[in-house]
Amino acid sequence: MSSMTETNPPLDIDIVVPCYNEQDTLAAHVRRLHAFCQATFSHSWRITIADNASTDDTARIADDLVAMLPEVHAVHLPEKGRGRALKAVWGASPARVLVYVDEDLSTDLAALEPLIAPLLSGHSDVAIGTRLAGSSRVVRGGKREFISRSYNLLLRTTMGVSFSDAQCGFKAITRQAAEHILPLCEDNAWFFDTEMLVLAEHAGLRVHEVPVDWVDDVNSSVDITSTATEDLKGMWRVSRGLATGRTPITPIYAAIGRQPFTTPPVGILGQILRFGAIGILSTIAFALLYAVLRPALGAQTADFLALLLTAVGNTALNRRFTFGVRGRAGAGQHQIQGLVVFGIAWAITSGSLVILHATDPGSTHQAEIAVLTGANLVATLVRFLLFKAWVFRTRRQPELIRPGTTPATAASTEPLPTTATTHP
Image 1 (cartoon, rainbow, N blue to C red):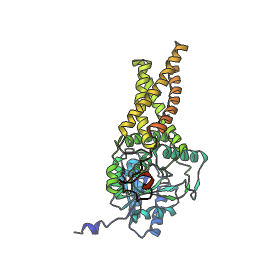
Image 2: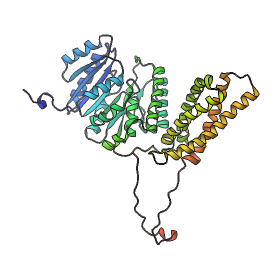
Image 3: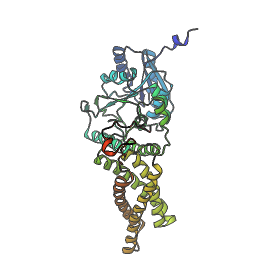
Image 4: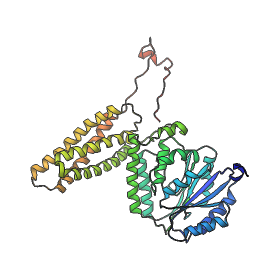
């Protein structure tokens, strides 16, 4: 009987190709990818076709390719979803480096070796292709270009990450990193890429970016509107999980993190953009909560509860993403100060209701929602100013002076050794 090493030699690279109803292009694209790998890689590799419950002839074509081409495997999944496919195939793969490329091969394969090399060498943990680098060459319509750039700008300003392109279908991750990150990724569809990258960066992993040449697939079946909606929901869920500690990324840093996550430094404009994006989400949440609570509790009580619930989340998100405060130190004090700010905001919104009812006693619920939404936007501006100037203001550390010295002589002595405390 052959040994395990003989029957299952070590595998360096597993390139996964998720596909759904791709009978017209799958064979040609897999053959092209296979020929490229044969000509390029000196490491061991395989291609895994991940059939996402296709209803056309994709499954049969995938099996035919397995029979004809060495180093090609196929996995047939009972449910749709790119994220679901990648979690299933990557999670079961023995390869040192796990890769995925979009079935349409929109990304030039010349970037595949630079994508994988930093992971094989141990330099990085995750690698992504980016279409937004200055040296990238991209061919696509203005609408998709605008949506892509807007989405990635929103990610950077609201979630405090530094990678440039979350959704390019050209990524790789080491098996060690995948074993820690994949169990935390809840999304099974298109947001999976973003969630994986956000968690990886916040866990202190090194993300390597490769500029790519990319040509838009004009036959893409992706529904931009529904995908954008799901992405926004995913951003809110992941942000809430990180802000509340529900998503346990600290153990990942302890195991393989290279450095504590620090929010990329931003100026006042960046803070305003992040705060504004969080404020918009909070305002939408406030309006929805008020609309639900108003019929049963009345205007003032519904206003109070809706504002209180959204203020708690708003404070936590801004503490972490807008002002870069991490760890538990001072969190209680910040929440107390946040409640004071909440009281001021409540006075603004409650005052708007008093004025509305005084001027229009028969105002409708829709009018109340409109007035309160506007007042909440004003309250959000006031909250930002108070957060920056009071709650999360940067405090200068006191100068350390040796016993027996005076401030005048301390400058001429060596500084006392200090211990830096970081919060991964």
